[in-house]
Length: 140
Ligand code: THU
Image 1 (cartoon, rainbow, N blue to C red):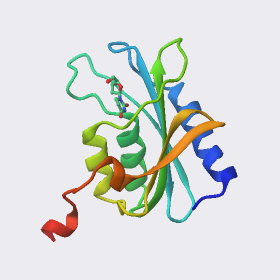
Image 2 (cartoon, rainbow, N blue to C red; image 1 turned 45 degrees about the vertical axis):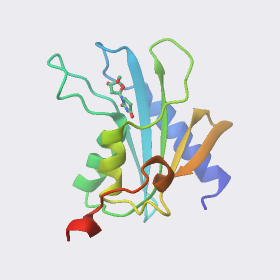
Image 3 (tube, rainbow, N blue to C red; image 1 turned 30 degrees about the horizontal axis):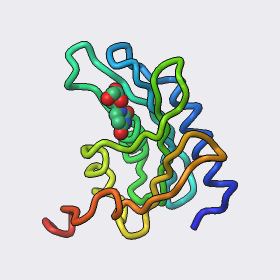
């Protein structure tokens, strides 16, 4: 369990990184903040492409930033999203991001914080969002 202060810091970091969203095609802005097991926070935003398929979600931006900095163990992620110039909506990670997370995060302990603000969020286990997941344990 994280302290409320740390949960709120994650939510706030996700909100801040959402401002960096590059999403001219969908107009949907997402921010994420990933906490490594050793206590560092990596922010990310969604980054779209004119040819669409290279688009990267905020969660994977944060994850790939962290892994490229040498991190491989993570505790939690906060995700916020909503239309540009609109209110934050309850935004849940897409299936690809859930699968990308389960590569590095223990589904039974890793927490995904979702909500619309630092006073309005809820934590879900990754296992709840991706039940019966196919993980590195299946292959290695
Ligand atoms: N998006 C994310 O960044 N994270 C999610 O989990 C849901 C979708 C982005 C991808 C795309 O840039 C925009 O939201 C609309 O799908």
